[in-house]
Image (cartoon, rainbow, N blue to C red; front, side, top):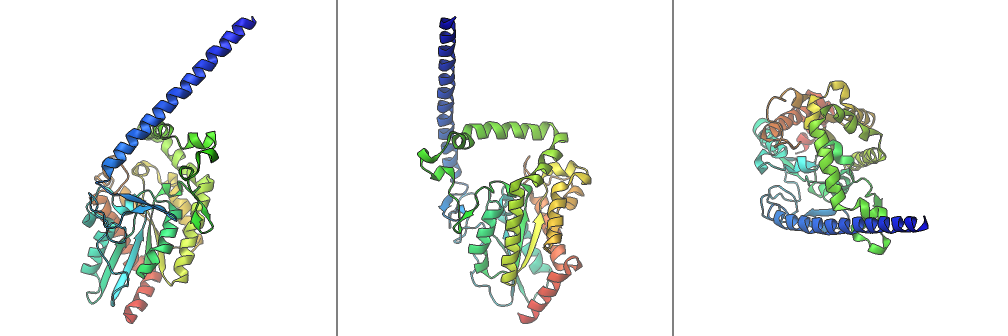
Length: 347
């Protein structure tokens, strides 16, 4: 009996060690593959480390997406706002960056062109695109604080997407974002940290999740709406409020624009919990808020997104631009209109 238990223990130990060994081999191999993929992506855009933001785009990089001397996907603008100019600084993630679009088709550039063709021809209108793909609300706050304000904006336009609450664990510490586990010594990282940082497990998790999103649409509302009950969602709102206060201190209008996921276009309006929660938050905090979901729903038979992603297509970008333009420069937003009028007298 004792011999059988001993033999079983040895077999289980060998099996366990084999599984761990295979996992390590697969993890290393997958990381090598990802590094190879990333090296190929350098021709698209290049990221550089930043002690506060985590990463930024390399200034002056010329690949598929041309990056200006400030590290943003836009034309070159002077840091000092020219006379007789109304300037909007657009902050956000990959939707604002314009992934999959030519620069002139990104909603900020479409709106800039429309402003200069439609509004007072005696003034100049600029919309600076400071969108960086992958950014969350915390990073966007520090980008606004450290970079956005120096362009002397009249309006801060935040392109919001429901996953902006992701990675909110990178909370500030001593004025900086905490270092990720990748920046720590391997002796300081626990087994749980290693598993959480596993590229292989992350790939399996996101692949399975993507399959669920595409094949079981009925489960999506509960999946997406669950975010509003997470701690990260509350943290995200704290930083949205910080943005508002930062803008108020600098006499800048702050506007939040919500972009829908393509899946949400098939939801019943009663399932738009994310939009309702952000809308109620903005109402409570007196932040002008525009939800683009109804505008996209009205045109959902058109190709509004790039491939199967939720990044706006050229048509989606045009819809967003038109809706934001009307929101800012028509009666829907009287407070900003009044402010613009006052600024116009001072220009």
